[in-house]
Amino acid sequence: MHKFSERLKDLRIDNGYRQDEIAKQLNVTTSGYGYYEQGRNEPSLETVKNIANTFKVSTDYLLGLIDTPNPPIYYSITEDLSLNESEILTLKKMKKLNLLSEISQQPNENAERLYRYWKFIKSEHNDN
Image 1 (cartoon, rainbow, N blue to C red):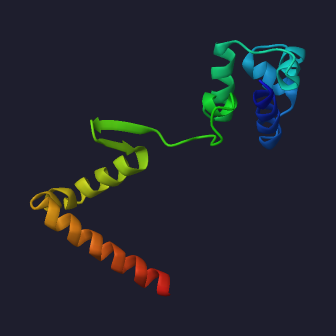
Image 2 (image 1 turned 90 degrees about the vertical axis):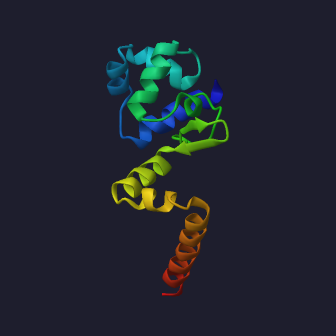
């Protein structure tokens, strides 16, 4: 729990909170919260969840299981296809522009064509 107490203190300081402010928000005593930061006491699972929500980080990050505060979430579409939220938003936009249905008429050929255009656009952008 050493990593937890370090991250808890860093998140509080980085977000400009005092211990008493976070304690009040979590409905714990200030000394109880201070013990979390010192590693002298461990919060309940419900409190860990509330801390994660307060600082908008994952519980895995708080517990030291991962080093990224907000890793992308992947949604399984089929057994061999998962998409993150950004990719889903991109598909929604492509569908709204009717681009997805046009590409889908000949998916292999049109996806390759779109990929070549995209590489060209990126290379032109990098040259400027």
